[in-house]
Image (tube, rainbow, N blue to C red; front, side, top):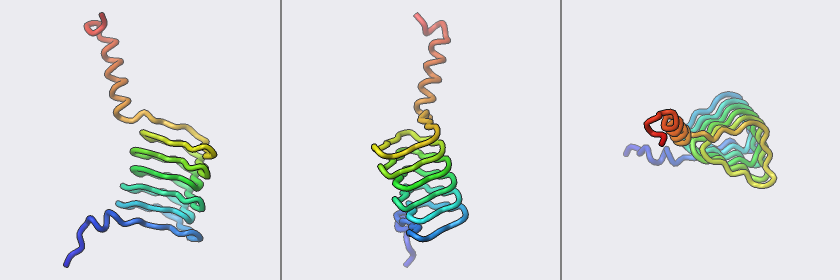
Length: 134
């Protein structure tokens, strides 16, 4: 009997404590890093960086919880949550961010998602059009 794709999409990939990986990782499912990754991490699911986790490279994913250390740009599709032990050195692009007391973040944060950009663009068009200004 063939395996269904649903079981693979629910899989969690784990980089355990004491493990060091050099290179890029691409995943269709969730990823948890408790070891060290020197490279870029791309996931269609959630990325969790545990307290002992370290990533030196870019992270692109749907959601992320960070308790460890990240050096590099983060692009998060929905929600980024920085826990009290988190240390992020790099720029963040996300729609929503939660930063708990104790977390440290050094860089720029861009929260101008596509929804916000389109409403700002529509507003600018309306105010420039003399027909819409009364």
